[in-house]
Structure formats: C-alpha cells, structure tokens
Amino acid sequence: MRLSWRRSSRVEDRFESWITEQHQRRVLAGETTPSGPCPDEEFLRDLARKSKSISLSDPRIDHTANCRKCMSRLLELRERNRTRRQRLAFTAAITACALIAVSVVVARYALEKRPSPPNTAAVAQTVNLWDSGTVRGEQLGQLESVSLPAALVRVTIILPRHSAPGLYLVAITRDQNGNGVIAEGTASTVANGEQQEITTGLDLRKAAAGPYFLSTTHEQDQAAYYYPLQIR
Ligand SMILES: [Zn+2]
Image (cartoon, rainbow, N blue to C red; front, side, top):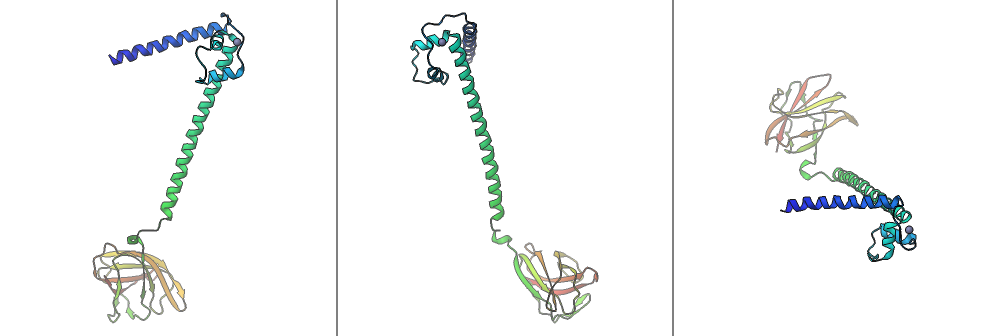
C-alpha cells in the first residue's frame, strides 16, 4: 500500500516536472503571452530564492510564468543560487576535512607530548664497578652484590679501573657463563675523568626477583666479565 503510493507519487512528480519543462520550453520559445508589465529584478531574485514573502496570488508570478524574458532571468538566477549552494556545500566539506586533519595532528601531537605513565618510565640506576677486581670469565666474589629493580632500568655503569673505551654489550644473565639472558643493551663508553662509563636501557620488568649476573663485554675483547646482581 505504502510502496505503491510512493511509486505513484514518484510518477506524479515526474509528470509534474514534465509539464513544467514543457511549459518552460513554450515560454522560452515566446509562445506565451504575459499579462502586465515585467516585475523588477528584486522580485525575480526573491522568486528564485523561493522567498516566503511572495504570495502565490501575486499577479507578477503569473506574468513571470508566461514572460520569456522574466522566465529566462528567473532560471538564470535559480541556477546561480544552486551553484552558490553547491560551492558553499563544497567549502563546508573542505573545511570539515581540514578540521578533521587538524584535530588528528593535534591529537597525535598531544599523545606524543603526554608524559609516559610511571610504569614505563625508566628508573635511573648507577652501578659502580670501579673498585671491583675481576678475573676474565669469572668474578672474585668479594664485590658487594649490585641490586636493580624489576623495572625498565636506565643503568649507568662505571667500568672497572683500566677498562678499555669503546662499545660494550651489557647483559643480565642467569649464570656466569652467559646462559639465560634476561635483558641486554649496548653502549659506548663516555669518559668521566679517568673513569669510563656506559649507559644503557635494560628491560627487567618481566624478571623474577632473585640472583643474577651482570656482564659486560667489550666489542673487541669479546671476553665477558660477570658481576653478581640481585633483582629486587
Ligand atoms: Zn516579463
């Protein structure tokens, strides 16, 4: 019922617009005779805008509907309005796109600028091995056990006396043979007076508390030095 009504309404619309077109064609061909004088431009503008201030009983409407000159001017004004509306819609769409782009950039910027949550902030720790006597491949044992938290750690290691400058591999291992690597990082030495320091990030968040070893290996030397380490 509703569907057929809708369909017939669409047919009616088509029929009406066909009549309108036929009428317009006749008017524009000069086949109709308008009554009364031509209205002014302002009236035609209002009519093109479908202004509500115009009454349908206004004789100027009847004139315009049958005058070749007024009809063509009316169609021209209507076309111009439509173009302007399209341009406005286009401008609005472009503005919306630009606003979306700007908000995406701002959101990304805000995200980057946002301080890291506390659990991902690296904990700065210093391990002083300056006075630790080590023997290649093993540790002497008199070194006071180093302790690091089970967290994301940014560790600065003061290398033992007479350590060579250069690139070092730092690792946290289960034993002093280099087995069971928990975390590792590389760092180049920075001279601080006569001391050599290396700073690297170590992710110990998944490490269970307990005894481990901290090893340092020089890139050229290749021999690892192990120091007892406690993860707390
Ligand atoms: Zn006219």
